[in-house]
Amino acid sequence: MTMLEIRDLHKEYRSGGTTLHALDGVSTSLDAGRTLAVVGESGSGKSTLGSIVAGLETATSGSVVIDGTPIDRRAFRGPLRRRVQTVFQSPLQSLNAKFRVETTLAEPLRLLLGMSRTDASRRVDELLDAVHLPRELRYRRPGELSGGQQQRVAIARALAPEPDLVVLDEPTSGLDQSIRGRIVNLLRELQAERGLSYVFITHDIDVAQAIAHDVIVMQHGRIVEEGDRSVLRAPSDPYTRRLLDAVPTLDPARRRRNLRLESLPPVIVPDTPVDDTQNPHPLDEETAP
Ligand SMILES: Nc1ncnc2c1ncn2[C@@H]1O[C@H](COP(=O)(O)OP(=O)(O)O)[C@@H](O)[C@H]1O
Ligand SMILES: [Mg+2]
Image (cartoon, rainbow, N blue to C red; front, side, top):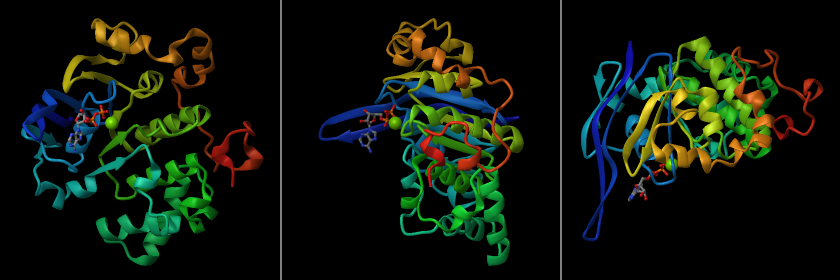
């Protein structure tokens, strides 16, 4: 089943007398339950593509169809508002600093699923369980959480309205290297459990290899290479090769350290909430109070 179909998408930004083609004829598709990694250098149009799919920007021309619904300004006032969710690089983009975690998580439940206060409160515990955070964290505000914990809350918030498609724009890029693999594992686990489809934007090739089923490589608003994730191992396009060469983590010595992240056919995540006493990596700030 096709979850996302993008045809000949263009996005132009005009300023002064010049026109910038942020997207210049992008076509691709994504089957349900799969992850499309969008990789490319900074400014190649990745976030613009993600923002249009998530209904945060409108295209200049072309079409985006999500599970049979063509998107336009109005589509996101209907069911797509619930069915398509986003996770950003900075969790603080989705978390209100003044709100306790429980308020942040209950809000979409009440607004988008129409739940009662009591039902929403109960569901908050389930959401915290799903992202492996201790339930006591519901009483904290974002400033009282570590970066990894904040991103888990942002993921829980995205999951709250039971979406089908999640657009993740550099969700691991703001996190310490040691935590990236854990968040990738969590996202893979949630995808397997819930059949989610992901548009996963990243400039981190190691992360893309760990999570992608399909890959598009972008440069100057165009797709220069696409295929399954093996294109990241054996790229045919010189730009993709340069991109891979530019990634410091592909250095063999550092690569070995990343093996935990790369060689994870079965998802390895503890099913109990992460807490300090069970943490095998005491330096991991994600579990800090
Ligand atoms: N709101 C905007 N106004 C003008 N130009 C923009 C805007 N958003 C993005 N751009 C430009 O579009 C191009 C693609 O940006 P972006 O999609 O953010 O790339 P990426 O996410 O790959 O770094 C860049 O040249 C960027 O400067
Ligand atoms: Mg970007």
